[in-house]
Structures are given as C-alpha cells and as structure tokens.
Image 1: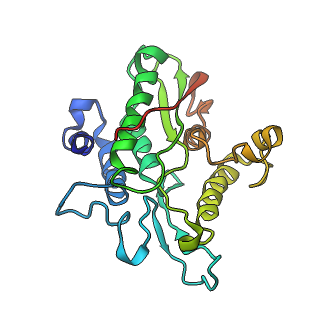
Image 2: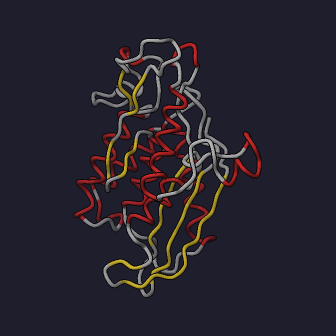
Length: 257
C-alpha cells in the first residue's frame, strides 16, 4: 500500500506535475504529516509514521488523534480525550478525513469535470485509498461505510470539490475504553453544531426521527466535512465570485484487503 504514500509525497515534491499551486504546499505538508502519524504508515519507516496510531501509552490502538483522559475515575469514563489537528478553523483527528482534505486541497477540479468523468472516479479512488492507509487487516476499527464528494459549480471557473467519509478507524470496546465511542461521535456532532448551527441535539436528527435508533446522528455521516467546508468558504458568495449549484454523491466502496 506504499504507493498511496508515494503519491502524496510526490505531490509535495513535484507540485507543478499535479497543477498544485506552490502556495498550497506548506499546508499539504502539514496535512500529510498528521495523516502519516495516524495511519498505518510505512513499514520500518525512519520517520514518525503511525506514532499517533500505535502508541504503547495510548492502548488500545486507534486511528484517532487522542490523549489519555487523566480525569477518568470510573471504568465507564472515556479512557481518552479527543485531540485535533486544525485546518481552516476545523478540527481533524482521523486519517480518512485528512486524506480527503489533502486531495481537496490540491486545487480545483479540471475544467469540464462531470459526475461520470471525474467526481465518481475520484470518490472511488478516495474510498479505496482510505482502506489502504488504515483499518483492517493491519490496523484497527472498521473502514468507513460511506464516502462522499460534494462539488460547487463556479461560473467561468473550475469547480471546487470536497471529500469526506463516515466515522471509522477506532476501537470502542467499552471494557477497555469506557465511553470513548460516544466521545468521538460527540466530537463529530459538535463540528456540525458549531459550523452549521443546527438546532438538533446529539440524540435527535431528521434521520433518527424517521427511522428511530437505527437513524444516523448528525456528524457520523460522510457529508460532515464537505458540508462544513462549503459553509465556511461561503461558496454562494465569495469575494465577488458567482457560483452555480452544489452537487454531491454518496458511495459505498469495497475496501482493499
């Protein structure tokens, strides 16, 4: 699976080759370093690959950026506190989401990009690459079950696109981690609450009202980061630019095992 890392590192070393603006390289480098620390990384790497994933002081292993919860007194308390890498004012703690951020931060879509010619293949590649950098069989937790791509039309300009995945990559055995699963889901919910200013609560959502407990909470779905990115970049009116409609696709992608 090293070819995924090879590609990401080549983007940084040779940005012109991928039509990446030089000004984007420092941010891409930061994103890649965080991704490497949380993912499987390179086998026997001399770098710090995988150090935030597999850490003896933070067992059981997680593909989640975390710190020990020193205030935990009972077995039921979460063993970890959720930590964040912040980009554009938004917190990230999972390599799946960091990979989506990296790909979207490389630049806009090609001129004339369509759902069939670009966005659907892009989403498929994103989903397959996610399964290559984290999760089974060498990692932990489940792979995301949903991958999402959202793009906004821009008049006489290239479209902007954003990628996201549903929550995955964590070990939530209550006997070992207490309420760690809820801690992570609350983290994703709070992203939505803060950035999209919804009036719903953690235990309520249109999906849960319609489907009961099997419905999806806000923040657990693949649209979380793409929708936040669009809102925060003010994609309808942005520095005088005129935008058309916003589109999106959801996909279930078979993992690479």
